[in-house]
Image (cartoon, rainbow, N blue to C red; front, side, top):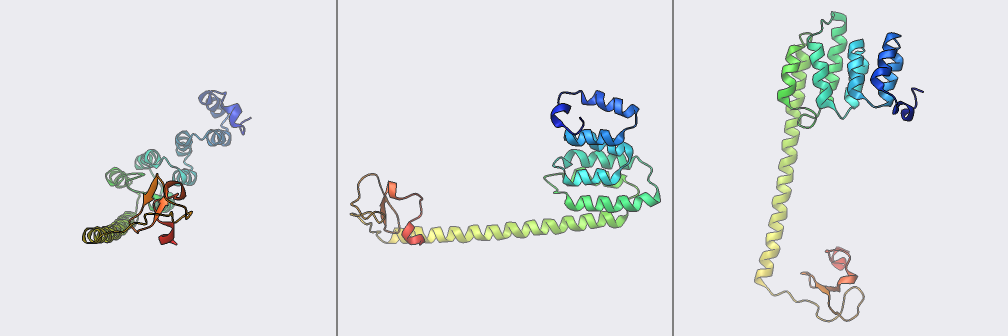
Length: 212
């Protein structure tokens, strides 16, 4: 029953979970949330169970990081973490931070205060986060500069074409279609390269002869 999404769709999930809680059937509860794709409810349940590996696995693979990351970091900031667990949590948080797309999943102003409140976090974890953040910013800047150079080059090429058109006459083929070789009739297309086509013989703006 619990494996079938259609059957679960007709149930009051909250009531069903409360009944299973009474019997401490945590495995079944987790399965219900997974089948119904209730990521937030499942994450909240796993946090309560302190199943941190499962919590971080869900968040890393989720498209709702903007909601789940603050939720788990806030919980960790008010939870007393034993030294044995802190090593594992540092590893999990470091792995999570490497998967976050800042600006899409979260913004920097949102995540930094949450990290500072997690007293068990090692300075190296936070330092590596900022280091990776700067590297990503540099990579984005390099990509933007490359794109800008390509746009400038394309613009210069277009201006050169305009300059040539302004300085000399462009002679068009007045008689036959370069596609079917029949006499041109309206509607026809006259391209700047000098080739002309019936509209029905040209399936794109580029000249087939020049492209070939």
